[in-house]
Image (cartoon, rainbow, N blue to C red; front, top):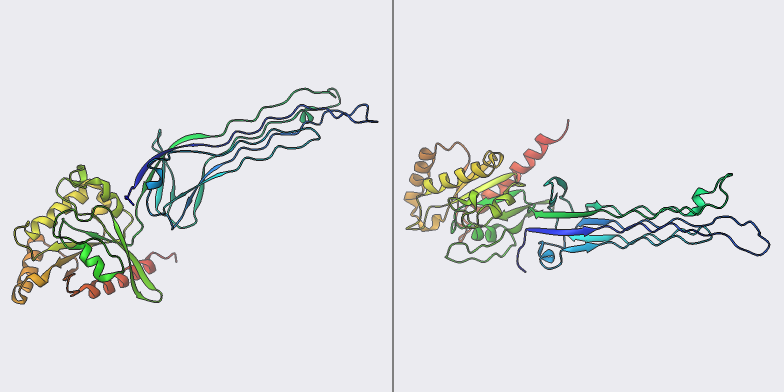
Length: 342
């Protein structure tokens, strides 16, 4: 299935049913009086976050959703039936915006979360509502009100605690394969990964976290070059970034230059994202001699003035990968403890 992370839909809540004008006419009841019932309420439109849905692909062809109208009231003070609500399943992590005002309506960031995005119209009043001592035969009724109509923009941002960041062919997909059960496509050409891949890192029965492989970014990504800004947004929910740097391939950009390119793109796209904790993973060390690895690590740290954590890894041989994952898990748990309310 094609990965789609944005969609625009039109939604229509049901209209309320009209009130009824009726008079009670029964044998031996000469002055029965008004008995027109109220109309039923129109159905709501509700968005529901569902783990079974992974993309917004369902909205590629179906873009209009309607709840049913409420039924009109009837004699004998019978209220019309309410309209059925329209429930729309969306992936967990979907942001909902009003298309016209661009206002953020809701963030459906947990499974089972739901939100009424369009309310059904109220049912109208029957003539029984208007009887009084001075108006014993009212013929007045109130029609049902219209339901809400809205145009919504849905935006999916993947839910992952850790995000993999790097230039094309930096080995992110191979690293994801090495540390999780995910099986993304791996090949020796740029942009092998065309959409975010999620993997669950399992360290024990109750020790796991989600890691996301974001498609390779290049210079100008924040302005839409390459796969561009389309996928940078998926890093916004992450708490930790693992920045993979290819130190083994020949003919590619210098490792230091590659790091600086992506640092610039993160800053331009979202300053808060550029300030997020980020660890450097000097990857593909299987292609570098052991004598050169330490010198290369020292050189990169010195040129960048890097003060954060630095690891040396090989996704293909799984060297150093578990160390990174264990440290990431400890860091995430420490962050949770620091952020717990006192």
